[in-house]
Image 1 (cartoon, rainbow, N blue to C red):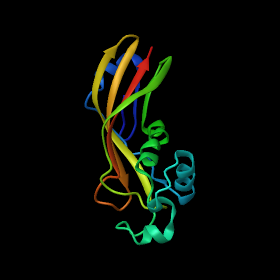
Image 2: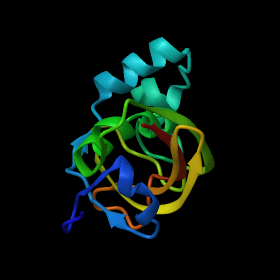
Image 3: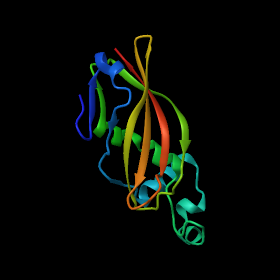
Length: 154
């Protein structure tokens, strides 16, 4: 069912994966172009994200990624390290306990690791809570810690 980095299970075995760790994913950069695009799409144009001069004078010393941008990058990371096969569909049901302990500097690289915190049977499938940690290359603290709640349907 698992190897050192990937968790792959079938819809029929989801009930058995509580406590299983997976990851880390590969490192992925967060380029300034993505930060600028996210700022335009979300309307969050705080100078710490998009203004090099203002950000340099901030406590961060330079431009940083939006916390919500970093969190939204979960999909490509999870596709690499977590999969439930034999489903008709899967959805993001929600999040619990999202925190942003460390900024992601523009151009830095992040990766994700996780653990299956809880599995509950729901009508037509399973609800899986993943305790996720987004790491910033070279940083002592994580960029994001969050519980992602997924639903996998038969």
